[in-house]
Length: 595
Image (cartoon, rainbow, N blue to C red; front, side, top):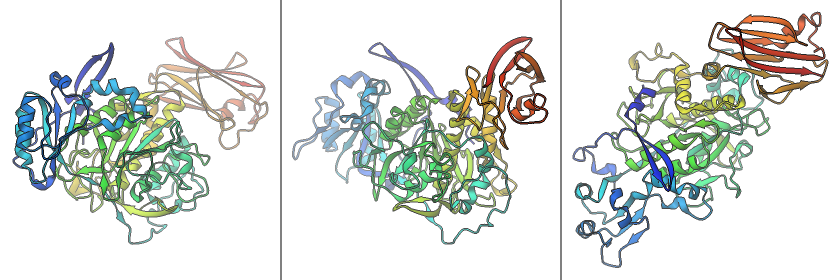
């Protein structure tokens, strides 16, 4: 299992460009033995190079195309000798499509330059060219920092289920909130990860953006449209295959999106993990299309673009075709997302990847990469799904067999694969961020990582042949949300079902005299890690409760009122003040005014 300690491999640099400082964090890049890789692992007729920054002014980041029957002439003698030897016909900047007119990424071009994205070029040559030899000779040129083959990428695809889901596939009975979506009973996987109890705590927030790096999402699907991200121009994402804002819907991407944030509790279709409460108030889905039919492209661009457009979570179902290979430019883009993503809700982004469906322990990038959270798949009995990859590099498991979700043409389907497991983790991550954001808390991406992998159900009794090879355990949504307060500062948070949200200690809540709390009483949650802190509650300045805080305290308003209203749960007009004292010093306070 990878964990946050893996980040000790990161190279951190501060680049100053035009007076602005940019932090660049690059993870580990283990060497690839070119003599051991298969010729089928890379694309013919292509190679990637990264120019040495000392020579960047000699080779601006613009496309260079040879004239007919000639090779590219850059004016750099060493490169032109190689261009002639390998008959290089084009130098194409790898990330130039980010700067089309109207692209928000134009605002971040200097930051991209600090990361060196302008130094990457894809070179085109004859399909019969000896790519390995070309890479070796380009690598030896002083003008080149990195040269590598273009390794083949595949969609971590899914399998269609061959049988209907039985309502008894997961017989455990859970309490908690359940949505009214008619196909919810077919989503056995939600009870498995304790979604009903998780939804009692949090259902999602439109302040959180999840980038679905996959097929295009059917953005007008009746169960998705209300939770789609949209830019100022009315675009629902970007199509990196066609370099267009026109999203072409695909089955896989639409299915993944539904697990993350299909509109929940809307009397339609299925529920999403972070899909809200029925009024389009769930987390937002950003469609980053990198697959269209048999065509693909823009994997690095998608990560950069998503970060620049305020996505906090990058949900991915792609992999290199062969193990132990990767392209540095793509990992650089993932590093960029993890450093600069998060928008206003998290410090940095988090990249979540499906582990792959080869039933193998081989090292498939990018899921194997230390800075991506790798998700394996389990079945209804918490056993490793027959197709799922495994290994010490897996971070967590999630249900990935017979997963019911949205599909194209306004439909729904049941599929399985690690790419069905992965969005369960992305959805839970979005719930955690939604809950933190509701309290006005901006957490760090490494905190989110730890909350996810440390709050799981142990499934190794069901997997004795895979001890330590399926991550920390199987994800549990309710446990992650319950653990979140451990990452909060000292705080009082007030919540009432009679109002529209939660309120931090700096705010006052005004409620109508005599309101009835019903079955969901007003509550005050007090988050404090010191067990020597005390909670005091005052009514019209008279102390009515004094209580030692033990880790997390919860005071029901109906309990508070019982001494004031002779057992009634109707509120008496007045001012209620909640205060936390530590070593006899007041450190937090919050106020409830009943009028």
